[in-house]
Length: 470
Ligand code: 5AD
Ligand code: SF4
Image 1: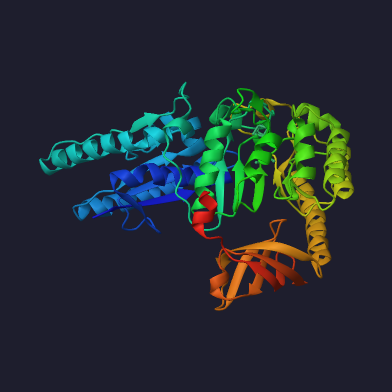
Image 2: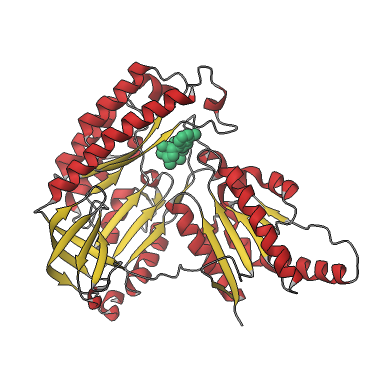
């Protein structure tokens, strides 16, 4: 019988992708995905360290899993507990010290080592069970791997399994930018780009399995500089052009990008490649040059405005999303006003905004002039109110427009399908179940604050799989 594996994923899309890959590497050694931790033989917490209280959340979840493990042991079974992701990378030793019942701690660069770590943990658990049965002490034997190996993990991972018409494809990992607020360069390591041939091959396999939309992932996805088939370094623009050649691939997205790495060729690709999504998540963090400098972002607010102008000139239906941090150390009312001004100037379809949270080991955590929580709360509320107004206005402006929507989910009611617009807005529509997976041309008939409703104009049902392989 298959063993049951439950993975709980926190944080970004990279973690969602990584969780899928961990499930893939564990399938050959007998683990099948489970929907809940109860009854599972192994639970992996795939953690995120980017903002506040990440570690505390993990420890309280571990407390619950410990109880589950004890219940299972009392019933003659066992539960392997693994902690993966960025909290594991940053606090691996601490986890094993504070939660000795954890069997495995592994950082994001060690996922290809998971099967051997699991085998080792299963052996240790069996020995401990025998010791307990004989009334002997059975010490915790947590296995830790938080190395940054010389050889990239991608070369050692099997091709990802896909289900549904939309898939993530990781092309780049790590970050060399060292924004002063951010843990990513420490938890994910140095920037690394996969080779173009491997990425294109993976994309082809996905399309052959029915995928119509691929989201290219990377912490700094447009810093991509993978080796091309011609032996030269290719940027993201060139990669998108190559992927757009794949018959059956209707839409290409990428996330998360950095303003500094938006180069001429990427802008040109937005002009030339219709499959490239007209929606870009391009975080700016702040509209104040003083704060951008203190953040080590390497660009000014006007640099960002210019990049957006150029992108919109290349593709006039282009729309934007961003991340913002309020209350970075030293942020004054005037700095914050500059952020609001930038938001007004750009106009966002949607955006994420956060209160600055000091991350241990990052330069900003030790800066003077930390902003009081009450001020951060006020600024966050003001920024979110403005962003919400823009989101609602954009949704309203979509009414009457025609859009291509990939119908990738079933609606809550029978006879309904759900998809994402090119701008990532959820769109509901009445449609026969046979259109699941189809790219449908819709007319938007109404809009709420968080979603749209559409009516079918025409549908391009999922392509026969053989064609996609050609
Ligand atoms: N505090 C608050 N927000 C942060 N982010 C990253 N680090 C921090 C931090 N220390 C936000 C940034 C980033 C997003 C993924 O998380 O806005 O773009
Ligand atoms: Fe973090 Fe900055 Fe790198 Fe983004 S670019 S991952 S915010 S250090």
